[in-house]
Length: 275
Ligand SMILES: C[S@@+](CC[C@H](N)C(=O)[O-])C[C@H]1O[C@@H](n2cnc3c(N)ncnc32)[C@H](O)[C@@H]1O
Image (cartoon, rainbow, N blue to C red; front, side, top):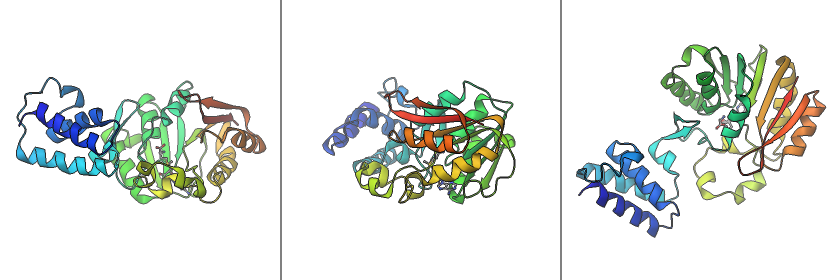
């Protein structure tokens, strides 16, 4: 069998399973099975496929048909143009979170705190973009911190990043000029409405805010004010309906220049304020 035939086998099977993105997914999975990049699939169309490579592909197709996202099957995801390893202990980084990166990058910072770092996608991106910056990143999950550590090593920022297990600010004692976070913001009762791809594969601790979908924000915003230098910035990812609530919370805790920022789909996605 050659690669062209493998791609057609994969896309046919994925289509039968009702996967809407069958063509794109087939290319990504075939590329992964053969150890090449998805954009090389066309050029390498006549490449010979071995039996073990075909077996790998078939087992990946089974997982995709059970709605496991391609990124989880291949164990990595591109975020702001860089590759991040993911596993069952971390949120699969979302394109939405690039809205936060785009905003934050407009004003450089030197001392950064990232709360609930997951894969480390936010903080590692900022450290890569700002070679002079130093950061602390926390998570309540030690398993997530292991993933962040391996991503930090891969992107060569280990020397400028301290990873700490902490329940939000519990183990944070210094001050920063930028605090960022993408906390869990989906209420318990909203979880049922989410796509199976999300609830079945992202860890609950990364997506569920418990009974009160604002609870993580209440904890973070109050402590963040005292952990920011004067003039320091707090930038938080939010759910699309939480802009008004977050504006009130930031205002209550003394933040100035509070602003809501929209994503590419024109949904409220990020809130920011200055101490
Ligand atoms: C929505 S995910 C964000 C992951 C990553 N920062 C991103 O943007 O893709 C939320 C993260 O917060 C962590 N988390 C949940 N509760 C926490 C807490 N009480 N203290 C610190 N981190 C927490 C989760 O383990 C998860 O990694």
